[in-house]
Length: 217
Ligand code: CA
Image (cartoon, rainbow, N blue to C red):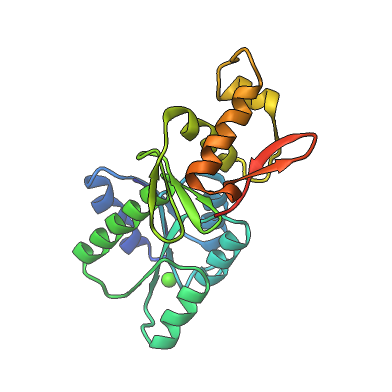
């Protein structure tokens, strides 16, 4: 995993970084909130660990700023405070997990692994309204939990639409990217029809005169 530790206790953070590197992770360290914010906004991490009490920018402010910039990276908050109220504040600010100091190193690393697994699961899924497209299994999961396996071409088409949910795709561009320049543009309409029949009419929206975009389930 790629990890970022934002912690001003130099001794603690150096110990944590050494342990986590020893487990094979790539670890960056920031000793204040501003530096942490800069790194978290500009580099890809699987999990970011943020101490709550930080110089320059408080840990919860840092977390709120990440979430307001749509950074959805898994975040664990570390804190010396451990009251119920503190936990609620941390979770409200968008934390995925919360650990109170002093903590057991084994517990920290186990929880980081759990967050890393969740990050991997999230990366392997694209949302379609209340349903989702599972990229490894090549299937749609409907809002009621029903699983609908897709053929290669159905999956390829829906994947392009779900990767850019705000974009209206022309039939020409879909023919090019999904169907490898098949001779007729009608192949796009055919596969939109297959998807709608299999998954539900609302999965793909027709934009009259332009093409198609992702719908919702
Ligand atoms: Ca601190």
